[in-house]
Length: 260
Ligand code: GLP
Image 1 (cartoon, rainbow, N blue to C red):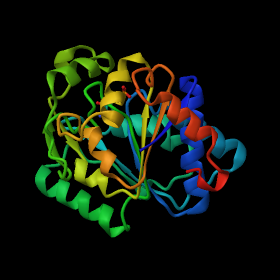
Image 2: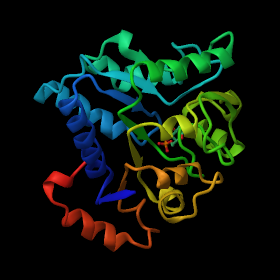
Image 3: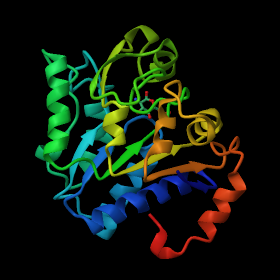
């Protein structure tokens, strides 16, 4: 994994946006895998700025979101569909027909999940997958013990994740118990993975993901086996990394042609 440490959340978000924008400029019809949660908000804000003031063009881009709550209609304020429209899609020129988000209201969830996998394959796979990190090291909604080769499917959230996400709902009772998520195996097939984390409450998850053993107990750690995975964190999230100084040194000494 390549680890990039930036001083603040804003700097880390700007770095992530630079990486995404570079991919979009190099391959205007690229396929982006997108995440929700608090972490990527700064990234989306910066990409919107780049679209508005630098003409960053999303007109040929296709997107696939990682996950969605089961039982929330699209228009629900906490649906990930609504999150993506509000924080990103409504402010850029991506075609609505190129946007893919699992449908939490699907009648037949297993067949919807298979279709989702197939649609990713049909467009040639995901070029760049953006990921946040759960406090327990989950990616998407792949909770600990998720199979490391899992595909898009329904999952039951842990009580800890429900408690962590309760801040967005009226109460913990209102957080859906089930979700549809790309699997660890689905994410692994992406050509490039970009993990983002910020804040001291993520420092242990970052440590375990980057420097811990590869284990289903920390789903993000599976990406240690990925040929191209970039981890962008702020100082607080990097605080438990043993090789912190080495990552900073590597980044400083990287020739421009080698930058992601
Ligand atoms: C949520 C999402 C993940 C997200 C993670 C961290 O449960 N399903 O995709 O990365 O948890 O969220 P946050 O960025 O709000 O800390």
